[in-house]
Image (cartoon, rainbow, N blue to C red; front, side, top):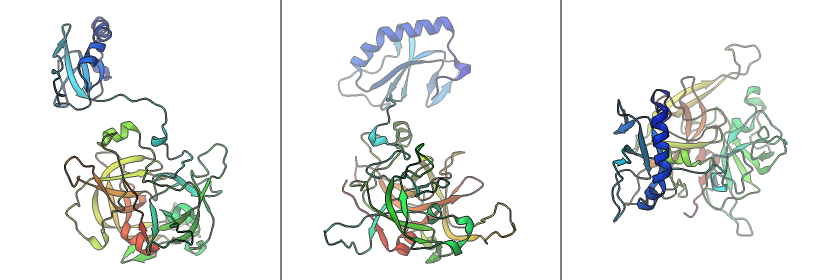
Length: 383
């Protein structure tokens, strides 16, 4: 809850009084309350998450978990030196870019899901490293090492404006992370080799597939990490130090051909190179959309558009977007509740983002169609 609303600014004399109180009593408060995170001030008090009108200025005690009293500790004071208090949830964090919270546009070593990737030398297109996969048969090379690949969209690595006749599905070229348009020095940080792509109008069980398979040649991941997991965004999504965001199981759910599941209304999340970690809801299973190459319908010499059949449509909460340009290739997960008390949420992959609509929803291809067309399976990592 924002304490900086202009209409609730604290009058000068009262503000000075409260700030003197903060300096005098904060150390004692922290000594007596182990779950206290921040001691601050506000121009209003809250009640059940809403602003309590005409409540007046107060001292705000931010706790890591409101309503929980640590063993043998007293409740927070209702009043401090004649000034009322208000208890809210919140926490404080520092601003360095830690390695575990690395940006999608950093040079990531090891590679992470959600990272910025692109074709070597192409400064115009950026996409997302979706997820790590292995061959269906789990074959190994002579040295006993299992080849590792990652997924993204074909339109991230190929110029779709030239039409399908210009695509070469098994053309070999280098893929870089981050994409060439991100870094000021424009050097190519090669992480893999393009091996195979599937372009619309290719289908798998009636589902249009737009996907590429990249063989990893450097910065191999040994665990399932995401990029762009800032503390604030994790906190907003219900994750943190004690409840990490993990996808190690390789679990997936098949939504092809309008297959229904009891988990249909579970929250969806994704980590994309542009918008990072977001949440939404699977609203339509089976949307069909036409992609037009030209900016004007019927523009001369424009290749015909491609139809994306039997896709998933995901919508963000309220007026928030679930994804934007640059997020193509990001995997979409449903968040299943923990299987046991005290456990972590279980992420189950359901699709890969290919685009969006003019009304700000996201379109994703059911993941099973992608995996079967490329003859791969999602990699399982140890927790």
